[in-house]
Image 1 (cartoon, rainbow, N blue to C red):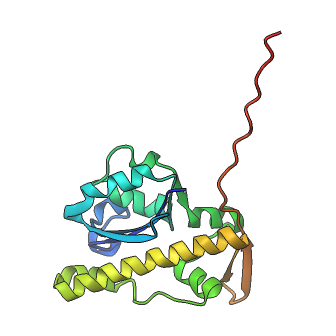
Image 2 (image 1 turned 60 degrees about the vertical axis):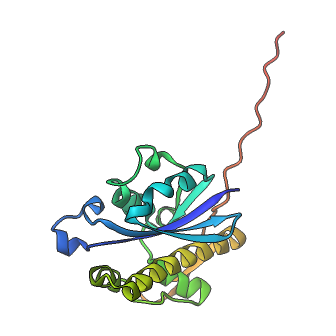
Length: 192
């Protein structure tokens, strides 16, 4: 299967724009992990046109809160068919199972034993600073979120559960099924 795991970072935060629409935030960088190639790509706004083909070729486009945030954030840049691609939103599947949100960092920490490498608030700071060193940090932060998303997805595919700590600080486990849907065999109708 050709899978793309992705994440993005925005140029601004909601409190800077006075809106709750992700499309108003601007996208600074998009990172993709592509398999079976097992390769990471990162695209700055000027290079977005070259990434759409990768998305279009995917059997599954995997993200975390991608349907409610990443896809709308990319809407000013994306071709019209982007929202119609085979998107798989990990957070959406978790919310279906437990009826509330869990952060990517919480899932990564409790399921994989690893955490994000930076504070999410720094993404906007790195973009605003704009130096080669700060843009490198921004790209690395985005790529690490992709790695966490990929590893959570892979763990769930293999083990059919994820771990998190609930609001009352209790360790919990949620059963999930991230496998591809199986198609029912087509039955040929009798001619007689």
